[in-house]
Image (cartoon, helix red, strand yellow):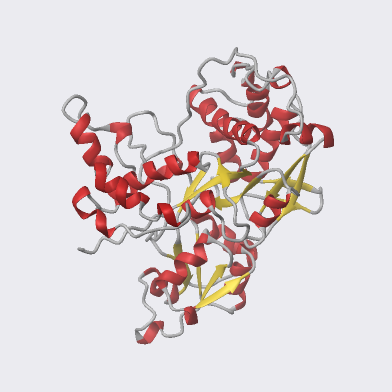
Length: 413
């Protein structure tokens, strides 16, 4: 909990800069109670004491190192995929992880992954009885890292948005790489479970957009539900997601048709139950619509109304397992940075940090499906061409990215 508190104080300072809140306007920051009533004014007090990130930087560092490159806010148009530093990898970690998630996975012989059946992310071929997709490849990388290079020791559970956190909390699955946005609420106190969760670095960046048949795609994109041609607007949206929360903020309930899954939302557009869709770029992509059926005069809006950094989720009760998952994802980013591929995965370093049983975890993770760029090209490039935040940051582009979930009222107070 304290780790979360520290992280979100820093996030609040970044969010303050992004949302135009300064040290002098700190009173526009609303109270919040996810850390308890005693800390309801924590964000307000933090910004009151030192200001937003820009103010802190300019006061302390700006004259020495003018702000540029990685230390600037990323506005969403340049790459943010960047690997961390491994540091010293020869230190020996514990030989056994008794009672840990890793120990349990080893004992049962497979890793349980929660996924969402969605084009490009998780698809099941009934003819061959095989899974494919970005999220599936991430599960296979975890399997390979755990089971000495064997990538198919995975059991997949197809989960709806409304049940995913409860299933993870129950222990039925070990990890959730299921199109899940990292937000303040989910990190600290997710409402369906009343517990917090741990998140990897985002492996895909998206944002809420609207699409639909003419003229309703444009109506939704312009947030127009009152003009004569837009009065019949009906938006299908996946229930239990950040997408429906944001859509409800933008539109009256009468314009919204909650659907149990993302695919059923698409089916609703195809069947005529609704005439517009809310979702991320992967939800609205023409290829996703064509797989469900023919939709004439389909148009996709250009405006993004939210941030959706998708990350892998684990329970907070086992930090070693959360760290393991985190560094498997990092390994895929680092491999792309270093030009290491599936074919040359032996060039990844070895490590004893998780104990000798996992010495080759980094090599095995990359050998399962390749570096991040290989996973993206194989699974998503035909649906959502790689661009913007999902590009590799070469080290000179803005990297700071306030996580979503902190909405500061910017009105004068």
